[in-house]
Length: 196
Image (tube, rainbow, N blue to C red; front, side):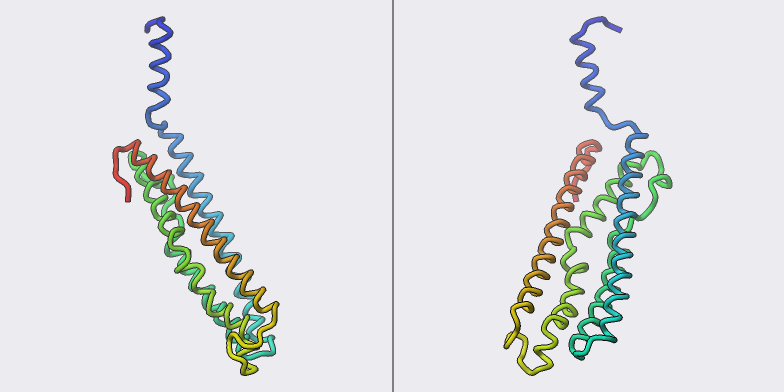
């Protein structure tokens, strides 16, 4: 080994710029897998809560159209839970992936999550809209006012709040999808692969 400080500095930068050690890759993949599983458990618990609460609404609320809206929200929740499992579940624990394929496994997981997050409007938000709209406008419809006629200010407030919440959830998921895309591009840069 040379005692030349310039050569040692150059060699240390080459080592830093190289691929991550396999154990670090496994830790990153395991952390990502656990994060996705935790997120999905929270989402499934929220779905269960929505099903319980809106099922009670479907039986207890006095206006029939609003009860139908609550039942529709329950149906939408089942669609969301199924889509969450189908589109965004963590496929295989990283421990079960072959050591040589850790990067490919991590990339595939990231692509799956990115695609799920990028399309969240269609499979996560849209199934809730019919039921929520029926719940908000149901009383006016039952009274024969039509959807837009004679609505109270708090009906419009509910619409505005719901729309703002939907836009916020859509924006958060799109932002997370962009972050995952950057991670995918980093893996592609390490492996010389191409993006999807």
